[in-house]
Length: 160
Image (cartoon, rainbow, N blue to C red):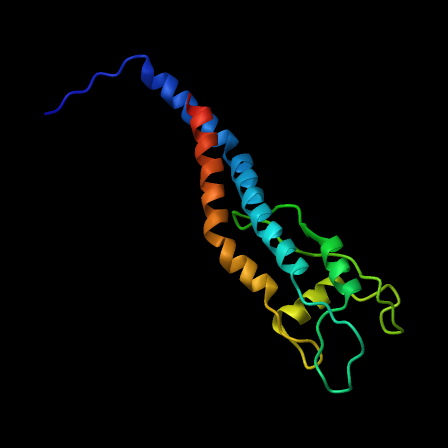
């Protein structure tokens, strides 16, 4: 039968594991925010690259977003506070607020989230330009890698 002798190092190791358990929720939240920042930056870049509609549009034609719609999306783009739901830590990246395009139906201005959704999937009056979908798809690996780095660095710092 195998025999193993453990010295003082085991108590120290168990203490470090306990510390790791205490910091893990905060560490996971920090990692998720770092990944979300990467995605948000790419969405911002994609918004800035959207074609801008200049001039009028004939009835029944699709159009590109207007400058004030793009400015509103850029201003409203952000990361929501993290929420813990069923043991999962979530953050949302998206648009908030209203742009400056005031109409009778939208006296505060058009909702930025509605405009972003309309451009991303296309409608009968706005050309489809999946800028959010492309940003999420193109940054997924980089965001996951950044989250992994943050968690590994936190574990390393705790276990020292």
